[in-house]
Length: 188
Image (cartoon, rainbow, N blue to C red; front, side, top):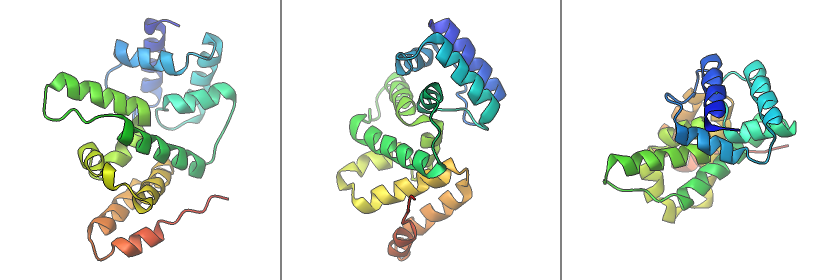
């Protein structure tokens, strides 16, 4: 599949599913999608995009399109756990470029977006932003992992107001322990 073909498919899908869709479909973004979906045939990818347009309510990540190519469907909890794993992987694998050129920042944002997708970017934003999470990665703990996991599940379920409330509780200090206890997730 060429960059142009992928760009057209992404543009069409972003018109049908504007929530969390990228503002601009660049050659770089198309290339990332082609790379992520390289194991599938053009026909499988087209079918997955059709399926997404018919069944989803927001712009999907490449991981969701991969699952659609495979015919796999997951629960919101499973998607949230997968998203939290991708956020954690991004935090440990993508260097924060610092206060250098805008080009480096844009490249880092695209790389983060390719790791976590648009919903993951929203979760990162609700947790205080990339800089804060990246700065605190060395203090990464089981508690913070559980908070990211819970907020990811909430985000996948599209309840961002609860996500914001939970983040406010965690930041407030006195409620931190209680909020972390409330963030226990049981996947059946």
